Image (cartoon, rainbow over all chains, first blue to last red):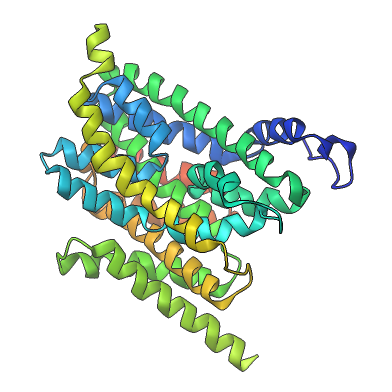
Length: 246
Length: 116
């Protein structure tokens, strides 16, 4: 399936754009990866004695795989609500720059902030990656509708995956459970790496991974934030240095 | 499984909102609030994007270094090896996400089977 050309009458209605967004979930391997990741989250929720409704609500209202995994594992291992909230919020800081960088792609000079609330809610790593890939092929005034369609499609897939995973959990061996949990870091790593076009992106990704174990040794509870800001700033320095030399 | 087990209690849902939804959504809404005036190609955004990528890298590293649930049953060396093998496959296939993920998974499963 190819998206219609930018000047096609297909783009004249918002509903059509929504439907094209919805259909675009079939055009990316990340949909399958997301399905299996959320299968794992459903299974993890079951094993940690959360209800199915709880798991579905976390997908619907949190909508960030790592945050959901962190929330379930910390609460499951007896952390306090405050400790879990801190761990979740640190993992979620990355959503701030993600939203900041993705919303300008769909904004027009007349777009009001409230029109972007739902798109901001849907923003997570998969949507972020796919927006950069799909949106150049979508007329600017239809991009919000397209993103709503794409996001709703992905959320629906994940809600189904949660339900299947929850009921599968009882029958899952430990090895299979481990394999499902390993999908999250693998898919996040490779989808981010594929989306890296500049040297700075690659430096940020590589250094971010290498610095985390060092930052974790400080045991400040803000490990991911520390390694992220340091690695990201060094990566920006590399970008700046290359610009100056060019 | 009873209906009560599937729906759970209100206390657990309240915890979800306090510890999960609010700490997560606050960053999206801040991005929505402050992102308005920032130009797509600005230098600030280049930095912000680099930090976002590095924080995501930290989340990836955290799951591998301090594994949750069943993943903790896989020995350290095998988890690192699986990521390494996946990375090699990803690079050899000119950045195929599928090849990277499948190779990493097969490496981990084969290692677990071999170790018994």
